Length: 120
Image 1 (cartoon, helix red, strand yellow):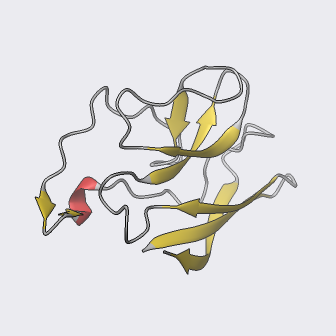
Image 2 (image 1 turned 30 degrees about the vertical axis):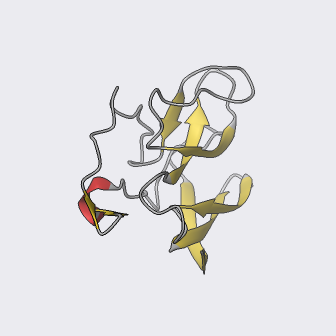
């Protein structure tokens, strides 16, 4: 089951509510994670499992994922998923940094992600 998170910063940036993770039908085939383009500042979700990594839909630049407070590029190749009954192992999915993250608006580490719901 996926999560819905709200992204906001003390500077007033409101990234809205983002659907992250994956739903039951597509679990293991994709995994949405908040990401930032450092080239143009675009902020959105992108598929962490996609190889090669998806580029920014605004400028084509590389995306950095919020798997840590300092967004990082994902590994060049996502390790092949080991599926058990068609479900990816929990340890193979990235986790979201939830506080003190890089804000796309002010450039400070004051962006936070708050869980607001679940989706499937």
